[in-house]
Image 1 (cartoon, helix red, strand yellow):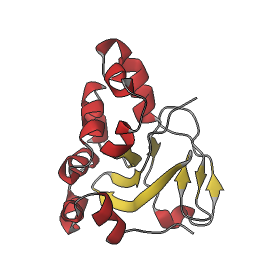
Image 2: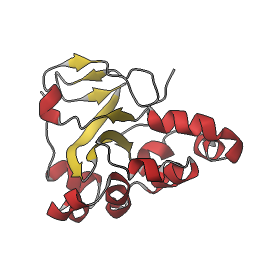
Image 3: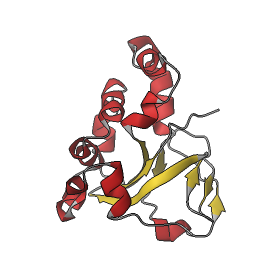
Length: 160
């Protein structure tokens, strides 16, 4: 069953203050910036030119890797993706972390599914015992933003 980690896991994963009641007034990008544990993700979103998109109406569901998740990638991966000549690849990786619509934990509890991402490929979600997204663990769920929802994951997922 999908667990909603509204306080304990969010506090462990990032500053709980960033996700107070006012977080729902912030868009996905500003919510991530305010958390302080998504600096790599925010830098990648900026480099890919996706800031305005993720500040748009949405709604979006974002599986947001932490800075630690990006740091666990092979050495040089992030730096390579951030190069201007690799922008298309970076956009593909980032949009693979996004679903159209707002998908809350209650919507998928007890299910396995493969929804299509904004990138165009499907992602495998298993919400039968905890929640995994392409093998990455959801460590905090249902962080509501004004234009969608963020679920924090402990690994960067990559399209095939």
